[in-house]
Image 1 (cartoon, rainbow, N blue to C red):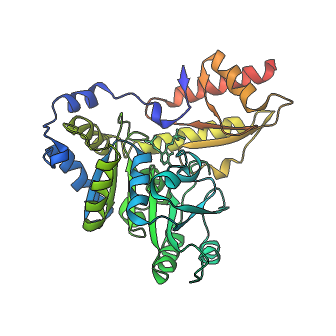
Image 2: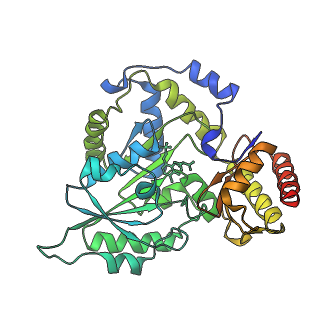
Length: 343
Ligand code: TLP
C-alpha cells in the first residue's frame, strides 16, 4: 500500500521507538517529566517564545490557545478553510464561546487588507474582534505558505488593534523550509504558536504550544481542564525530540516527492492540477474525468494499492511523508495512469 492520505499516517521507526523506550520520565502534571520539559524548552527556544506546553494533539493545542486568548462572545478572524474552523468539531463555540468571522484567503492565505476590513469598530452592538488565527502551512489550501512580509504586516495590524495572533503551525517546519526561513522568524509574528510532531516529523502524537510565560501558565490550567494533563508522557516527548533531531532536514525529500507527484499527475488526462502551487508536501488536484469524481478515483485507487483522501466532490488530497519514497511516488503514478486508462 502506498499511503498518501496524510503525513499523520507515519509509523514510529525502530530508532524512534528506542528513544521512546529509554526516555527518562516523571509526572508531567506535576511538571516533573524531564523529557517533556526538555521538549517544551527546546521548542520555546526554537520559536523565540518564553515557554512551551506539550499537548496530546494539534486540535487540543489550538483550542487551548483560543480558550486562553478569548472570552465568550469574542470574535476570531480566520480563513474559512482553516483547520480550526473546518475540522475541529465546532470546539471554539463549545469550549471558548467564541464566534468566527470567516474570510476567504488565497489558497487559505489571508491578506492583511482583508483582515483590516474584518476588524470590528468599537460598538456596543458588535462582538469585539479579539484574535486572528493563521495556518502555516495551510492544509486545505494545499500546503500553501505565508510570506514573512505578510505575517509581519498582519502582526502590526493586530497589535495596533490590541488583537492577538495565534498561529496553527502544525506544519511550521515545512513552511520554514519552503520559504527559506526559520520557524523562529515565522513564529516571531504571532503571540502563540503550536507545532505538531505527529505530521512531517513522524512521531505518534504530540504538539507543543508556545507563547509568553503567563499565557502558557493559563494554558496549562485549560489543558488540565480539558483532560489533556498526562503523566509519564516523556515517552511521547522523546519521539518529538527524535523527530526534531532526525526528521526536520529530510522534509526537503517530502517536498521533492510532492513536486514529482504533481508533475506526473498534471500530465494525466482527467486530472487538473497547477504544479506551481505545490510548495510543500501537500498535493491537491481536481478529478475532471467524466463522472468519476473524487470518491470514484479514491475508491478505485485504494483497490489498486494507492491511498488518498477526497477533499471535496471533485478534489483529492495526496500528502507525502517519511514513509513514502521517490520510488513509491513513481509506482503510485504508474498505478494512477493505469487506472485512468481503464475508466
Ligand atoms: N490535520 C489532519 C486532518 O485533521 C485533516 C490531516 O490529515 O491533515 N492543524 C492542522 C493544519 C492540521 O492539518 C491538523 C491535522 C491539525 C491542526 C490537528 O492535529 P491533530 O490531528 O493532532 O489534532
